[in-house]
Image 1 (cartoon, rainbow, N blue to C red):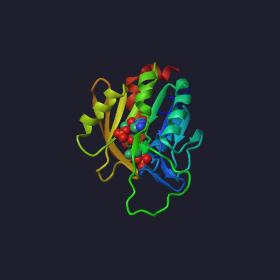
Image 2 (tube, rainbow, N blue to C red):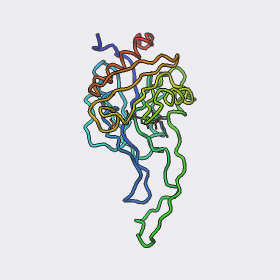
Image 3 (cartoon, protein in one colour):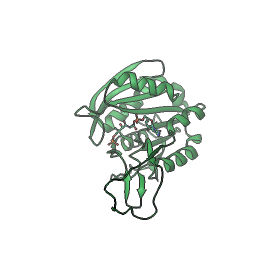
Image 4 (cartoon, rainbow, N blue to C red):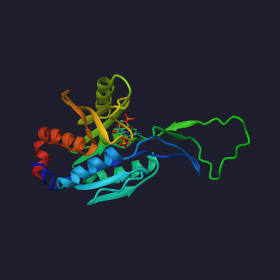
Length: 223
Ligand code: PMT
């Protein structure tokens, strides 16, 4: 049964968006609500895992029994994840991390004096790619939010980042992706197996992903 099949397993989950600040009152972000990542954290905790949740700013409550670390920027998420992951057996990277941040941060509120404001963005560290380099025996599960060529692009990300699994979401679908209470998508394995998961509540979707991963990683559940 699902109950306590992850006992003794330590899992890191990231969730939510990041904020990339221009000045103290303005930032670049995305619509991630944290629902998917929080559902994974809740499902893992229900199954007996020890769960560390690194979350960007969201308005939902953390699931019971989960250790929550709040971060805002991609850089902060990077540092927290690198600190925690070494002691974890598995990582779920459901956060929607900002790929770029403003090159300069203005410590005072930018005045609207000019008609045009040109922003230069620089690339943020890719947290998951760095985990892929350092992962050792840790099982890495990435997420991919795509709008076209879902399977192809997600598979490419899985290979480039040295992941064990990737969950591919078509965020243009009605019942999937950002802010929705449901999700649907493909779970793709390192071996190239593609498992289609139909639309369901995000918590049930989380349990389904975990079921499929556990089937393929029996050593995980032996402590
Ligand atoms: O939070 P919700 O409202 O419930 O929405 C859920 C979701 C749509 C955000 C979630 O299901 C999802 O798809 N998350 C991943 C979104 C994303 O950033 O996808 P990506 O294709 O840009 O990135 C691929 C992977 O690399 C992700 O696991 C991401 O966490 C990771 N990444 C990306 C950039 C970066 N600098 N560091 C990273 O670790």
